[in-house]
Length: 139
Image (cartoon, rainbow, N blue to C red; front, side, top):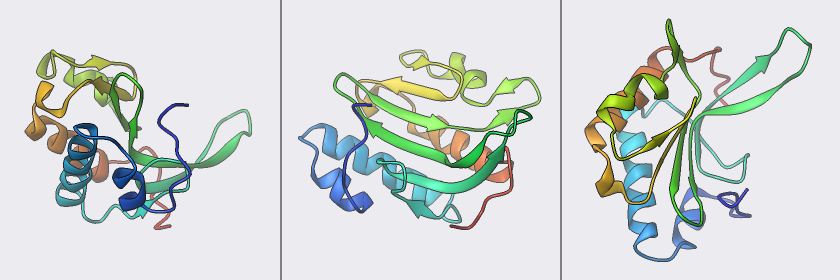
């Protein structure tokens, strides 16, 4: 995955990016920290993550993942939000409020932070933190 790096900290990951991407990813990092300061930062997944949880599928497969994470890819920024609502994935429920973004089940992709409404991203983070798919581990 292009967005994964060998950085040990969020700052190291962000500082290793070229401008203007560095400024956008730093602003996203600050947005997440302000919107949900209770989400513990992690770099366990090769990208800045916030709030970890342990999942277990009916098949028996299990692991740990971040509730929210950011990846700087070659052509866009990926903003992952692994949260669900009663109707499906949280990210997908904001499709109409983020018209310039490409939105998958749990990924919001955009070229520049200015292409999306930061207030909407903060709202998504707050909702994800308030109702994660599994209990957060506090890692």
